[in-house]
Each structure stands twice: as structure tokens, then as C-alpha cells.
Length: 370
Image 1 (tube, one colour):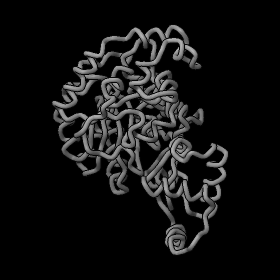
Image 2 (cartoon, one colour; image 1 turned 30 degrees about the vertical axis):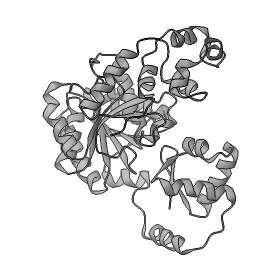
Image 3 (tube, one colour; image 1 turned 90 degrees about the vertical axis):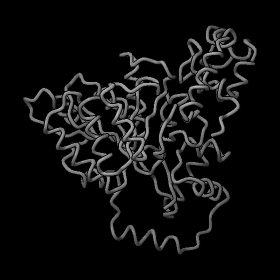
């Protein structure tokens, strides 16, 4: 594995005080990671959203040794660093305003697969939650969905174990570094996930402990990297509620399994449904139909016929089609960035391509060729 020559600066950017993912994204719109650290203070402080305090934090940062230590860890354990500009970075996350600047990945699951589903829920799950989760995963595996969760006890672990059992990739998003597995009881599960073409993903460097405040950050990755989030079972204050709220904020599809009205472990799910923050989910076919993942016979015929038709495309449309040929899916942000077209030109071209059945719109503002 060849590491990016700027990796030490990319890691360092995540370590600068007062510079979070939002500010890092702003800075990267003006220059590359290395250039940020070589820039003059007066240049940095004039950037909207940065100012004198953050500019001073950048220009005074000298602790590159920790970044170099992290690179040694990456090389030793064959970790894959995914900077926000890396084509293998989870592209769905780019639609989130606070997308992580850098991710650390160990595994082989495709993080930009066509169907990514988060299954989440309480740590103290019931037999009902276990049955529902196992059934969902078994049926989603048939549709070749990648299962994403947070490696916690309860629903998370059930989802990961069921995915391994059904030979479908599953990705665990961690609230700590890749030098450990928390809870430690899931160490063997983590190994099985990686062996089963799954993986472990985190934005935290090695030696980062699973502190309480890391979990909401972890949850935003779970919500942001998936097409949809399914809440199996949770009380009204569960961590899963945070993930569901984040998914809603990212304009992602959220589904919830209903429970008894007097069951405290289902109050969260029932609340999400009641407040229209989640769709009431009763079976896998309903979910697949809602997501548009069960094409009808007519749709299949249309797509087949479409491939045989000669369609005359405009220059703008040709640029977008060529971008889509390079990847299975691509986000609207990436199209805007790589096409060199104005956002209005991109919107017009995509609309025409959709009307001609050349391009299909997917959840999470993603597009693919039909």
C-alpha cells in the first residue's frame, strides 16, 4: 500500500486545536493539507469561518511527531487512511456538513456500495429485537446490502453477527482507535467481520479511548454513510435516537420497528413514528420498495431498452455521464466538484438525463447510470 505523501499533514489537520471537520472542509476549499500548514497567518485568518484564533492555532502547530507515529501504526497494521478527497472515502458522507476529515479503515467491504443500510438499537435488546434484526439482515443479505452498525452490545452486535452468518459484508463504526475493540467481548466478532469481507471504520487515531463524547461523533458516521437507518428498538433517550436525529438532519431515510405502547424499550421507535421522523416498518419488502430497490418488470424492460437506444446528449450531459461511467455511484457534491460546471448547469443536465432514463437518482443525493 502506497501512502499519500501529504498523509502526515492530513493527520495533523485533525489534531489542530479549534479546527474541526467543518473548518477543515472550509480550509481544504482553498488549499491542500500541506499548504494549509505553510500558509501565512494573515492569509488564513481572512478565510470565512477561520479568523485569527483558528489561524493562530494552525500556524503555531508543531506536533507533527504524533502524526508520524500514527503513520507507523497505519503501516504496521495495514490500515487504510481515507482522506476526505480520496475517491474511496465514503462518498455519501460528503453530503453531510460535518463529514470527517480523515477516516481510518481496516477491511475490504466497499464503503461506496450501491446499498448501505444502518441497523441500530438499544444495548439491552429483547428477544423480539433479536428476532426482528436477524430476519431483516437475512433478507437484506439476499439483496446484497452492506450492513452498518456501531459494534455495541445488543442490536448492533446482533446485526453484525447476523451479517457474518448470512455472508453479507458488515462494517462496524468505532468510537475509538483501531488499536482496540470496545467492548472487548467483541474482539472475535471484529475478526470474523473482517474475514467475511467486512470492516472496521473510525475517525479516531490509535490510542484514542472510547470516551463518552466520542459516541455521538461515531453515530453521525453511521447515519451519514448509509442510504437508510433502521431503528430496531430503543427507549426515548437511547443513543440510537441521536443517530436517527442525525440521519434526519442529513435528509436520509429513517425507518423504525413499532413496539408495544407500554414497553419502555420501544418508546423511542414509537416516538419517531408518531412525530413522522421515521417510517413505520413491518417487513423487508416494504423497506426495499420504499428505497426503490425492488424494480418492477416494466422498469427492468425500460432499462434494458434504454441501453439499446441512441440518445444525443448535450456537452454538459456528456461530462456527467462520463463521470458516472467511472464509478458505480456519485454524489451531487462530487459531480459539482469534478465536472467543472456551475451548480445550475449540473442540476439542469441531471434533470434531463433522468427524464431520458439515462441516470437514476438514489437516496442520499447519489446518482448512477440506469
